[in-house]
Each structure stands twice: as C-alpha cells, then as structure tokens.
Length: 253
Image 1 (cartoon, rainbow, N blue to C red):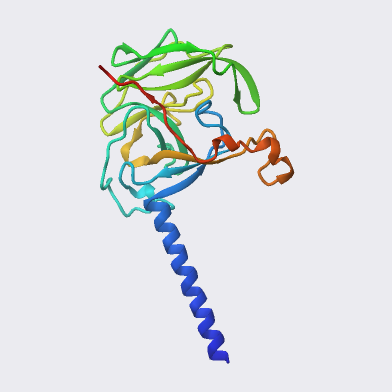
Image 2: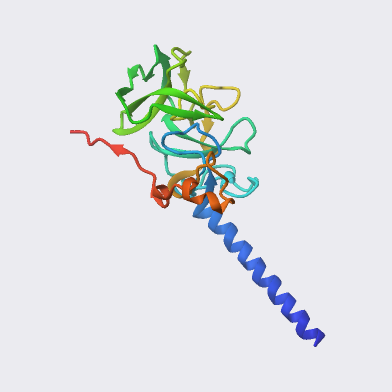
C-alpha cells in the first residue's frame, strides 16, 4: 500500500514537472501573454488589453526566456523587425521591465521633432488629422487630444494622438546606433519611450522580446476589476476579444 502511494506521488511529480517544462517552452519559443497596464499605446492598445506576443517573430535571445538567463550571447534565428511593428522589449535601464511600443527608427536613422512634426532621415513623416479620438487617458486623468493618421516610409499607417493642452514641439536630433532601435508610444504625450534616453533610449536588438499579434481578452479597468464578474456587462470589451493586431498598409505604386 505504501509503495503504491509512493508510486502515485512520484507519477504526479513527473506529470507536474513535464507540464511545467512544456509551459515554459511554449512561453519561451512560441507565444507569451502580456497585460497592458498603461495608456501609452492608446488608442491602438487600451489599458486592460491582454495580448499574445510572438516569441519567434525576431528570433531568440536570453530575454526570450524567464528571468533572462545568460544562455545566449546574441540573437539566434534572427529576423529583422520592420517600421511600425508593435514590439515588446526589455528596457535598457534595467533589462527586466517589459515595455511595448511602436518601432519608428532603425539602426543608422536620424529622428527629430520640429514644430510638433517628426522628421525621419530629414523627411517629415506624413500625418493627416482625423476625428476618431478626441479624449484619451493618461494615468487616472482624461485630457483632450488631436488624432492623426501617420504614414511611415514603408507604407505602414496607424493612429496617434497628441495632447491639445501641451505637446512636445521640438527636440534634439536622435541618431540610432548600430544594432539598436528607436520606439515611440502612440499616445505621444503620455509615453515613456526612446525620447527619454536615461529611462528607455535606444533599444539593443538583444532586448527585443517579441511582436504583438493578438488581443485575446480586454477589460476596462475604469469600469471594474476583471474579478468583479457582476460588472462584466459594462467592463468587458467583447469587441476586442481575439482581435488581430494590424494596421493599414498603403501599397506603393
């Protein structure tokens, strides 16, 4: 009897171990879930969105694995990210915190804000004012914004918002180093991104974690916690469930 109990315990431990190993491999090599805690990427990503991020989109580095073990000194099976991608990366300041931002600048690019416009390699990024979003969250505060459809040189377009009560008009020139990338949040005046060199700055390709692919769940935290099921009628954003993350691509003639 004691032997049978011992065998059952051993079998259960083996099963649990195998399950943990499989889960870690799936999370590290295929897809990892992420939660959006801030409004820095609104209106594209909302506070309370939960995403699946492709871990194989750009290949693998030490940051592909839990706790970033020093098992890889470079990226393997590397694929280069493209302008406009929504990328999860480890912030260079601590190599631990996950951020998600939009990729704007590639290695060797120069970027500068001039009178509120972004100049990429001395050419102004085209943007057209639209009326889709007039108010946006920044922390616990709502403030009025102007919405724009921006168009990158590779034909990718997306929506950004700029505060009506104060926005970044001018900046120094940013020069993206080799093997690094420059990221911006779509909520331009409520985003800590590559403009803040001491906090984020230029992101080494080693720090790339993956590419955002699908919003699989979304709950408006301003209307209730996801654990308060009695608020689900108003808090759940069912129209965002299993929504593929995409943006318009303008075909060049």
